[in-house]
Image (tube, rainbow, N blue to C red; front, side, top):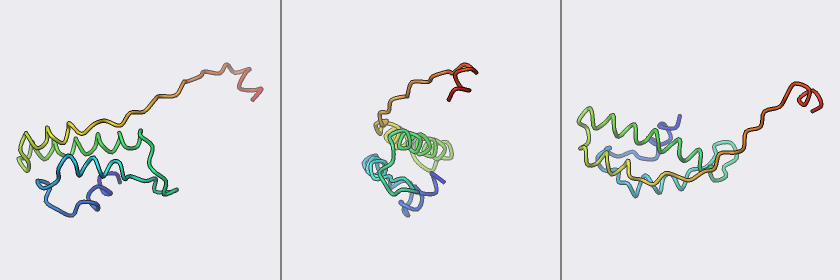
Length: 95
């Protein structure tokens, strides 16, 4: 689904996709359900798959090593992991 959205956004040869285009794509992502801007975690997930796609394309010799490396340099969106709490069974029962 994620790479499908990327493919729909870029109906061009993979060699013509620039890091700036990928960065703009990530910044413009929206939540499919709410149409609000996507969370940075979502952007990071999309970026990881796009980088994997370009690494695959490099291994297949569809793009140069330099091109794949440039895409990998697109900044990772920053996100903060939330605090994970563990409840004991008696605490959970009270909830």
